[in-house]
Image 1 (tube, rainbow, N blue to C red):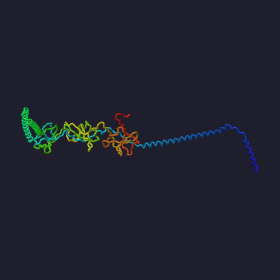
Image 2: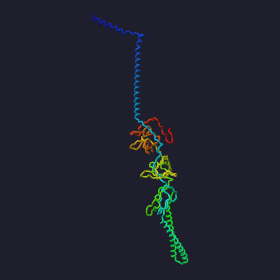
Image 3: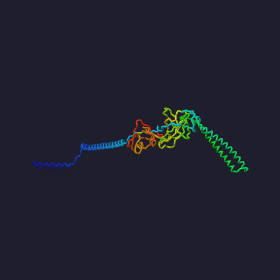
Image 4: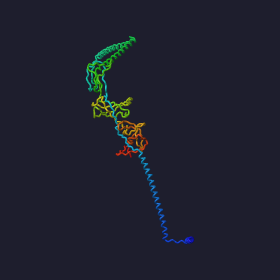
Length: 429
């Protein structure tokens, strides 16, 4: 029974389903259409939100990537900047104490001469002692030489004899020449008498010369001052035997010096020889006269370098009319280099000692450049540079041993900024 009911029920359900299938659909009402549109609008809003979220996510990702890229670029720049060494620079100074040099010297009398005797004998008397100021031509001493006096007397007597013989020979020659005109004597005898006259004339001339020589020698018995000066030494006394040097070395009687003007010989090193220009002014100072300054003039130089000492001998003349300076004194001569000599000074801590020679580092166009230099004088904390540097150059202080040409460098800003030196003959724009 149950079996029969189940198929029947299934048949009825089948017919009902078929009827529903063939039934014309009903027109939806307004409420039904409104209920079906709400899910569609919800789906569009969800899509918009998803799109906005995707855009926001993209913006966040782009901003993150850009920030990381900028950070990496900044780090790269910072690393590159940190790799550039920072250096301190100084400017060479052109106002050098290096433009003056001080050299030792010794004063000497402008004229200095020993006084000797020209005739032998005994010193009869002297008139001036050491320190005496004498004038040219003043009598200094007298020498007693009787031998010279006697030789002069004999020479004068011989002269008179020769003059008498000359007169006789002249008369004889004239007479024979007169007789020759009348052929009273021969030509031979006449020529002999004329020749005898001429020989006697020569004898007279010889005796006259001998007399003059002895008179001159006798005049040397009196010793006179040859120039204005001071007696610096007296090496004889009354009764001393004076030898004129005929058989023994001569003896110096006096020593004289002219001190109204003094010479100062200075040995100037070869490197400063350019300062030895005639006419240059020299300032002189003496330890014996502290605080006093004397002025001299460089008058000449030897124009030749001493091969042994590598110096140039120069002469400085100084007026000493007041007698304040004495010959033989030690002086310090200060000379100024001529204007055409240009040099600068830099601190000693800027020097670089390498196998290529002495160099300094100069900042040019943001890079270091090693410049070879030539040193003049060393002042301890500073040195003179005589070539390759200008006052406007930026010289690196305390350079590292690894510094080479082309190395990028950055100049350290100083707390008290120094103004850049102006180049000679113009201004910096």
